[in-house]
Length: 363
Image (cartoon, rainbow, N blue to C red; front, side):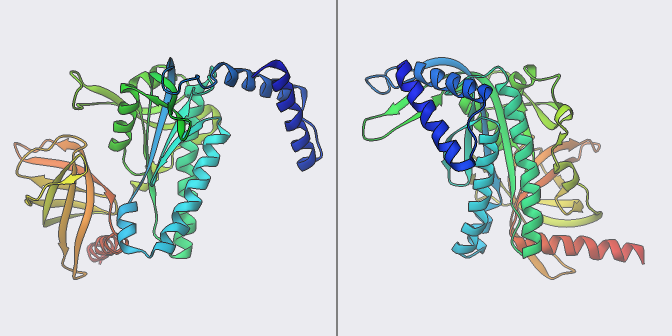
């Protein structure tokens, strides 16, 4: 993009903004736009697509809607679109607000980049602020859903920072700017480990922003292909910006002690294994349960539960959960879990079951 081209684009932007708002770009805004155009010029497409990829540090954000699969199975298509589209629109607006770029949509998932194609010194901070505001907006959306009698949705977010290859893949018929590399894969796996309403960040991201954020952790997890554990932290908030992840409040609910038999199946790489294993629920709340099992499961293992709720005469199926922690109990395997996805009716019946037992204990 030659100097004359940059000036031409700037003039066109002036004209468009003046026509729409009645005001011209300020001097500082014009300088920022010119810098952006110059940076994009240095990253123009090579003559042969796919042959020129640059190493650069990028912060990658993956966000995925929890409970969407269950909603697809239980809601009409028009209801799904009425819920999904406004959600993705608002998430996109937040990403652009924090000067991120959307790499791609993958169904109910979003991959966003901070540091590509344009680098800025505060890429990590903007990515984290973006993630917190996304979760705050999901909380607001769910409030509207409850008022309209529509199912609630939750989002899990994973963030990683590292060196990737950035460039354009494809041909003259179709091409896209993207990033590839192990750090991208790690970001995706971190997102897969996040619970609903949660933001998990890698150690490399944390090292670049430790004075900027409040976090919980670290949590060491083992991933396939990684010879040593990977440390993750849960992002709680950004005090200097007055931003706080609202998910902590989701964990607060009545909890009841029970002895409720259930069956579960282990999930690996999205595949539900057919073997149904037995267990007992010892403590049940709106959003999770304390499980007694015959064998120990890995932390963050995903399971699918089936259980009967006797007081409300309901068989809860397709209840998905993640193992969060182990509870020492003199050789007995007890593990804390949080529900990650369940049909709306199952959610309602579990809450009703808990409430009835709470009231029975108070009488």
